[in-house]
Length: 315
Image 1 (cartoon, rainbow, N blue to C red):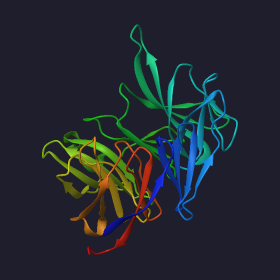
Image 2 (spheres, one colour):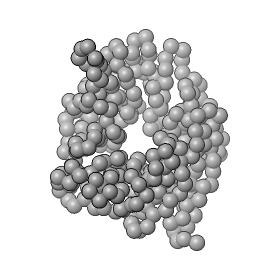
Image 3 (tube, rainbow, N blue to C red):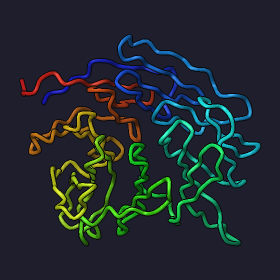
């Protein structure tokens, strides 16, 4: 597998977040505006800024903006319009993801509990039109290390910190779903740095740091058969891998590696697990995602690079 940078998408201001819409568009959040890049025409389209009196909470994976009404602490969506839910005054809220429909949201809420110090407590809240906010049963004393929402299965996957196992929740019911049995007790010796679910929902890819062997690893775990053996597909000396993301065809996984302040982008194909390609360095905490068969990497505060496969064999 060989990769080549084929296009640069440059914004006029630092990019806060970038997401993709299907095979054709990259949407970048820039302060309170959105900038949409059509990957066919390469033409950027500026979308209107948010209304006065609101702040842009985040842009969801489907490109939808989510607004936060500071006066009433009400979450709104500009695509649907109107109020979704009121949240507790003083809560610190951020978007996790939309799921199921454009009007269903999962939020991470931080609230101060106890006196006199006001210790923060983190929890996830599900908001839908016409329903009261539903808080999931688990709480954390620290901000969870990572999480993601699978819209197809309507599950939230979340990891607090080592030595706790990863958790999953069924969003319609709020009930926990066990997913860590495939690791046995070995997860106690592993620091999970990220996870991603393949589009067909069959495999979870975990990036992790092996605390015993002091190496980074990428492992695959079956979702529907959690007692099956967890496969190690890559053991890396490039440092701690993190932020995995599946290609839409389910045959490649891209992830960050290297030093946290200057991460590398690495891509591995399942058909050739013993080899991987190091694409480029990227912006710390920048976007790493797929737009169809292209890999989108944020290489600076204002630049997104599009990478494409040029051949299946090294030249």
